[in-house]
Amino acid sequence: MEEENRPLLSPEPAGESCSNRGSTDSLDFKAKRPFHVEPRNIVDNDPQERVSAEAAILNSRVHYYSRLTASSDRLLSPPNHVIPGPEELYIYSPLGTAFKVTGSDPSSKNPSIITIFAIWNTMMGTSILSIPWGMKQAGFTLGILILIFTGLLMLYCCFVVLKSPKAIPYVDTSDWEFPDVCRYYFGKFGQWSSLIFSMVSLIGAMVVYWVLMSNFLYNSGQFIYNYAHDVKMSDSEFGTNGSDKVICPFPNTNPRGNHSMGTLYLGNSGNETSSSDVSFEHWWSKTKTIPLYLIPLLLPLLCFRSASFFARFTFLGTISVVYLIALVTLKAVHLGFHLEFHWFDTTQFYVPEFRLLFPQFTGVLTLAFFIHNCIITLMKSNRNQENNVRDLSVAYLLVGLTYLYVGVLIFAAFPSPPLFKDCIEPNFLDNFPSSDVTVFVARTFLLFQMVTVYPLLGYLVRVQVMGQIFGNHYPSFFHILALNIIIVGAGVLMARFYPNIGSIIRFSGATCGLALVFIFPALVHMISRSRQGLLRWPSVLFHSFLIVLGIANLLAQFFI
Image 1 (cartoon, helix red, strand yellow):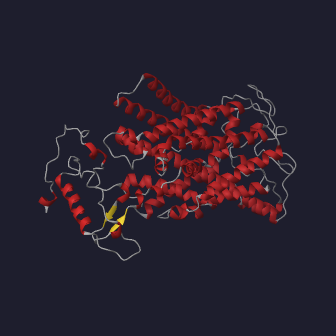
Image 2: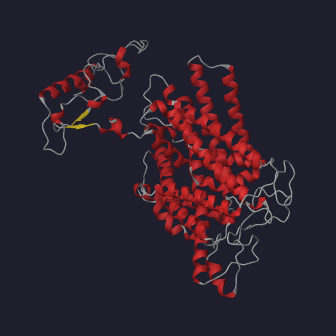
Image 3: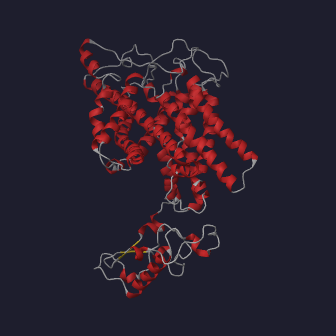
């Protein structure tokens, strides 16, 4: 038995190059290509036919070639004239039947328009709610410039990530992701560090989701309670009057002060409390009770072995974003624009156009434009691979225009006076009262969407963490339960003591962006070009600047 499995010829000498093998270089030496079967012998809905004698002979010939040498040696791989084209590949069954390889069918790929909107839909996350706040922190004019500049930088780094597997010679990288590329260049350190920073982005997103779900559930419950009991909003609430009421939940009576780090939230957001409503306010608190109510709902969902059920609801993300854009447009039309340009001085109602708090916006945008850890997978489904660069650029353009549209309209329409521009909240929906019907619909949409997406994020965390540590995505129920308790606990603590999604997003964005956006792509590009003998000093300076920029972006979050 051992003699039969031994190759008939010894492997080639180590020094011999594979570059002179002709057509065999295109073959994947890790897997033998299937043989040809005539169409009349293909299994369909008809009764199964035995494989023809011609196909059986061809199968034996391919097996003969595979016996000639070890699988790591491509010298005597089956030549191209023995193997059919990709459109005629079939899988041979030991039972004597053959099945067509449907994955090689070009019709199963997506056209460019589908790929573009898939990228747009993937990037359109919770960061869109913090764009107006980030623009306020940077200043209106500087915020627009930073959004454009950061989007271009993120696009370039995404190009580098997308091209990185193809720059590796003599290795089949068809199923590689960027962590695999990091492992190739940096060994175990690259693999584990890319995993850790990827986890920062995923767990950071899950924490933000928990804070937002607590917020949306609280305001939705408040709306239903007020409507059922005919409770009117308090006139003492700091905000505007009229049908399109805008509020300032945490007014800053000293507009020249610096309140960039947010407030330690320990209570409700200023709703009037009467003796008849004491019980409801006690049990329906945004920070004290609502984060705990979500545990019995979401913790069991995180423990599901498969997340395929929740993947069916991903279309809700597109609906939510489209409704959010329509809501922003409606509010801007009703409220009008309220702008005054004060370049460097803070006034009673307006912030300067250029503020030193701008790194907070760059941290938010790093996560808002972050798709680098899954862009290779998304672009594999593109039907025309030669259009990858164009399609990715168009997708980033659409994402940037969406962020710019929402940020500019909310900032410009925020009624100043009588409110301060500094009152724009990290979640701009908090600037509208819970009694607003259109905002209530938006919160309900977003709440249901996040309840379905949250288990998907947990599943991604589980697959990567458990797969790396135990080599099994589901080692046991207790392993999964322990991991989920840690994740849920982090969300509950943040929702309880510091529900500022702007700060959570900017810290997690700057942290994961440091490695997966700036350092690793820049180093991979320089190492690859150096090995090809194509590295030049302008490229070294530019990519070194990217690394310094990523480090400065993270450090600035702690000092600004």
